[in-house]
Length: 626
Image (cartoon, rainbow, N blue to C red):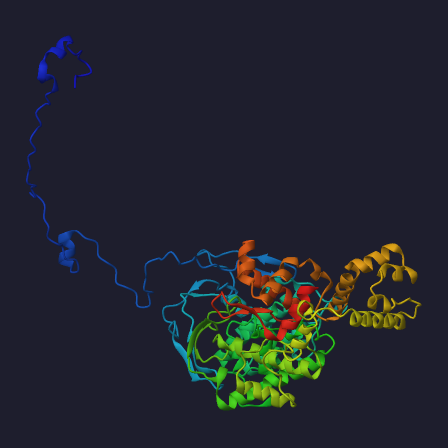
């Protein structure tokens, strides 16, 4: 390229190939480095001679009790210290000394987030206890110290110890003092709230449960969790469960909190679950994470234990809720007693023979961090390793319980002379026999409920094309019908004479002669009146059926699908209308779940062979014609 300061000659275009020539590149040369005046030797430090030779500075000796320093990690936090003390309705600040420490005693220091001392009594993760479970599900429990580099909630534990032996007296004539806190602590209360809390705590110890905000209850729970050395665990778990049972209806969130903290407290301190919790087990097992803890109470095939287990399984592990049956509201006590009794009989037999859900051939393992979400100081925080069996985690448990509940309701319906039945094909012959023995009498008939013997006789009435039509018989039937109508309505209605049908004369003249109008006579002769009568009769009979609702008239497509199933044209029906057979089946089953409490259509598992359950064929025929 041309230099910017020089102007390019005008005749560069005439220089030929020299115009495209590039300048000569400079060659690169390597120069070996020189270490003249430098040294690579290390200088030893330690002796005085070496110190003088290297002109180094003498290292001071290490102190005997000096702490070992370690690299600062990103997780390290600066210790915080209390700079004020609570007094009455406010906080009184105090100064610091020359080092920046509070000018108070050691117990006034807030020990939140202080690093653990290197010379601690127990190492992090150390095994504190290891024992074998005493029930039938939990096999092994190992309690270990929680792994953490910091000491936390020390101030709360200190305040809990101070207030443990104090007594309180409510102000304002004993009225409840409001107190709200997401994570309640002593330092958050004023004098009125603290007095009411201490009084509330004394009352609950005596078995009296006054009105109190949830923050008071949770604060007392935190106090029990953090002071096992002052509150014996056997007493502490009793207080926890009594608070739970008495206040859970007012504060439903206690189920979520104590449903997890009570098992942790019980396993850490090896104290049993109080029996007063057994009454609410069916409601809390559904919400608990470690459900097997609440089922581990069974020791033998005791009737009371089996009834409690039956209630838990019905509440949380049955796909069919018998309380939604249309017959339940009028027979509540009978349904609750008999269905639970039938399931209890099956469970007792299965427990004794160790079959079905009691075949405990698989071991589960679980690790829990104790007191999650609660205020728990470092000394009481634990990690729990659990090895256990389970009778509720296998998927077969739901099918087992659902089939027994359905068959028990079928037996109960049979006793109440109720026609409808639930699908119970999955129940085993052994369990079916046990339920039959519990109810006594004849078992529920299996198979179809259609009257096959009466069907040929019924079809003979529609053989007019092959056997002809007898006018005299039809006239006799019509005359008898008018006679019955007159008796039922108690009105003077003129019947059509039978002779009008026997003779070859014009029937319209005989109809006019008995006083009918011209329009009425023409409708009778033309035939629609007879068709309307048959439709009205069918409608009345369908309205008499207890499973037909008033709003079923809008299910035009679903009724057509049921008629197609009855005639064997279901696939063609769905194909012509661009519908998926499975989608149409779900729509019909959803309707019948509301009507009779069970599905109407099922398949063989391939998604192709759809058919109506034989037990509900009669209901399907009636509903599809309505």
